[in-house]
Length: 137
Image 1 (cartoon, one colour):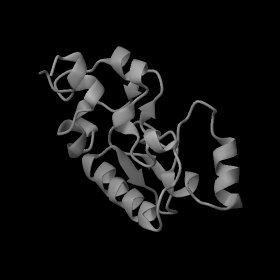
Image 2 (cartoon, one colour; image 1 turned 90 degrees about the vertical axis):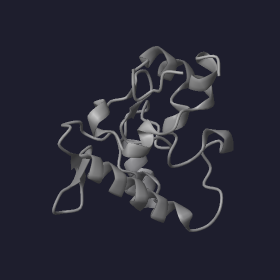
Image 3 (cartoon, helix red, strand yellow; image 1 turned 180 degrees about the horizontal axis):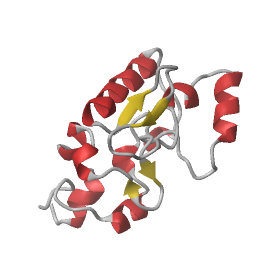
Image 4 (cartoon, one colour; image 1 turned 45 degrees about the horizontal axis):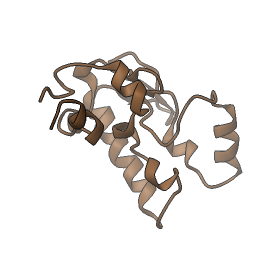
């Protein structure tokens, strides 16, 4: 099987909608926040991974900005998952095609916007079932 870290297939990511990139809230749970308390820590974990990879940077004021990769994140999960009126207002200002359940670098049609060298390490270590099935595994 050719690993996604070895090639990009925007058509496949477009077909499945980026299931592997649903980092923050699972598609199979309809994007609902199931459980208590884990999401903020999980967002921090992924923020750390993306900062370490060079994909993301945090400005002095705390805003998520483009890292060395030069790609502006599509949303800030620290804001888009706030369960209050501030989170609701933030989500309302996002383009309708931005899926806040997914990584802030996941485009709905082309998948990951990041050059391979700036993706979090874990993104090159895991493949989704759709990818594996396409390669006959």
